[in-house]
Image (cartoon, rainbow, N blue to C red; front, side, top):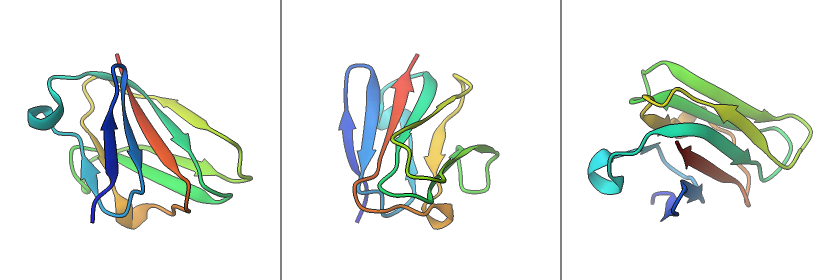
Length: 101
């Protein structure tokens, strides 16, 4: 399976992430990003985002240590976000948003 992906005017929304996901300019157009918003499903959820591939530089590890509602991280606009599912811990109800610049 793959994540459920919804393209909004100002962001891409991922839910039910159950495999690696990489932003594709061919699929979504030439987008630049400014931030990641992570809405964890439960305490101790972790979203790991890298640049381009699973061996790319880590962009961020967003951790919900106590179940807070949202974690935000500004990112380099030239980043090509890649969710490294094998490094994530995600509970039901999680959501990640990649906000366009």
